[in-house]
Image 1 (spheres, helix red, strand yellow):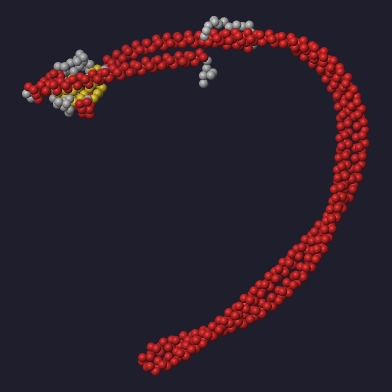
Image 2: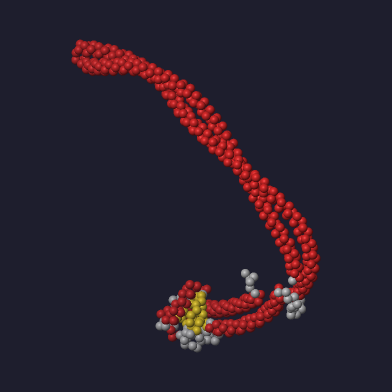
Length: 574
């Protein structure tokens, strides 16, 4: 935070902080003293009211000892308090708890009247507050501050502190007060004196801080300027600082040491430059000899390289022409092989479609045979089911015949019962009714069983026809299954022959593709040979061109080497 703030500014801020701290301590001390003075004044009022209460108690005790009445004791106590003055003209006031005045040294004409209903509003307000304080605090008492009159004055123009408390003997309220303006006047004088003292201290401290800042910032500024001279190479500039044992003195000594070391380093660099100049001259002579030897050797190599490049160009031209001829022949053969391959692929595709159709017919024939076999199985199951149904209908017919016999017997028994009931006369009438009901039910049962017998006979007739029809269907489906099986066998034989044809066509296609692949390989090889011959030819031509450029580069290199040697020496000297 303070990294970019100057040291002089930091010291001034520190001094200002100390000044503010001293001023704050002065103000705090003044307010503490003011509080102490007010507390002393409150303690004095509390003690005065306590003394008055003790005096009332003492008068009461004496009156009791002398056999005086309470009225006599009260009059004597009020007279004693009336005659007491302290601190000049300060006095006591006595009222009862309702605010009726009992004693006031300067208002004896108002004794017996209520101060709470006085004519002056300030009087009513003041004594209303004092009575409330007395009632709330009892014998402990309490304080109230309001405008009051100085002793001998007729105006309420001064701050006055009142204390009101109930005395325990008669329950009176004893009131007294003191002016507190003198405290403020005294404290104003003290604050003025304290302010002058703080100002003098601040002035002294400020002067000391200014001298301290000056004693630190000026030498530091000198050192900074000296470092600036060193950064520009002015090593002969010295600092105008007095030798001392402080940090500034140590800094000055370190600066002088640094300046001496930098000057010695500059001398060493000058000697190095002189030595480098001598070395550069020797190196120039050595490089000149080396350049002559390099030129002689590279020249011979360049001539040999040019001859070899010419021969390589001739060979590359011959190889390129042969490769072009091979490429044209391979293109013709590749075209014929491609035509043969396309024809073979067309036959193979047709054969594959034929084989696919035959496979589909075979699959459909096999599926028809499976379906026919499944239908035969289902017809057998249906025949068994219908046979079971026929047997069940036969059993139901037997049960119906049994029921018919039972109904006939029941009817016969009902007839006999009717005859017996008729013989019985009147006593058999009820039994005759029941016999008639039984007879009626037997007739209905016989009728119902006749209907069931006819329906069962019809079911048996239909079942027999169904069995015969299912048998005929089974024989037809069996014939259909045999035909489907024969078709599937014939189709399978045709599929085998078609597969053999497709296999032969596939082999012919594979051979044709191999021919095409071989021709393509020859074509690619011829093309690559032509490209390689072209690349060799280009390389030969480029090599011849590079040979010329090499000769030029060697000449330029040697010339530049000689020039650099001279220029480097000149740079070293500069």
